Length: 201
Image (cartoon, rainbow, N blue to C red):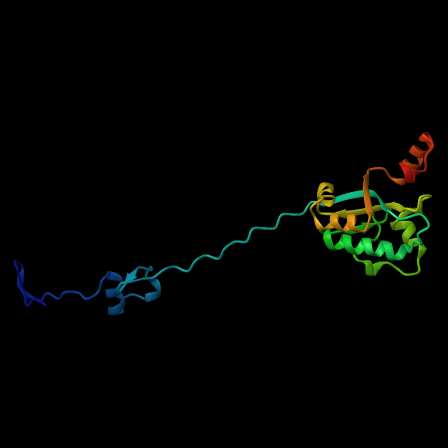
């Protein structure tokens, strides 16, 4: 600390070297400034940082829903005893497991109740299969076939993609699914013109 200094306007004035590194520190020490009003800056060699603003989560993009009508067929040997409830429940369980957001719909009714689990299949209601496995029957050569209507959030190419687990399940259980854009009334008309049962179209 220096002792004194001579000025041209008056007596000796003591010169005091400040130990504060900023004017803000000095003002806080003197009590003339509220610390809350001071902008964050370097105080005693420590950088004071403003709190980071919370990150904004991006909204999830809506999923595209695809709706398909298709012919569903089990490849069975002639004379095989068919347990319809068992076969259909196995297919529904596997499909709802491997296909995202799978919903089985009534074949004719666009706004009917959706089925998402094999637990929803009644044990003793033939009308269920008439509605959800439309025109099901056992063909002359033994195959079980019928029409299904369902929605999901993947395209048909991904439903039938060979390297995916769902296609492997279909292949292992000899289940075949063919895409069609025709409803039952159209199938009957086509069958009438070509002289074939709609199940063979």
